[in-house]
Length: 135
Image (cartoon, rainbow, N blue to C red):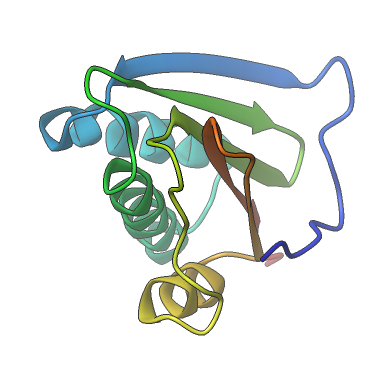
């Protein structure tokens, strides 16, 4: 269930790491950080809102399979024209992310340039890449 992302941030890009408890009450912190970094890249207002919704949806998917007491680790990589958001959480044994045909994945792929996920039995990661629309 992995889609390849066409560009990975290179060393030297601006990277922000943010860790919050894996609890829905803390998602506003991640949405606010997402909006602030997207605004720094001069994303259009609708692009910022789309990215906030996508981050919220990705986190909701991860919270559903997180272990008790886990933390959401969020890595934001900023390049000249894109923002990559990578969210990781420790998962319960046997946890599976929704399939790519699920509504949640349709939302992620509609709101971002690309989305990918991986789960290895101990943790799951969702990676979102959004490129700024050129004017």
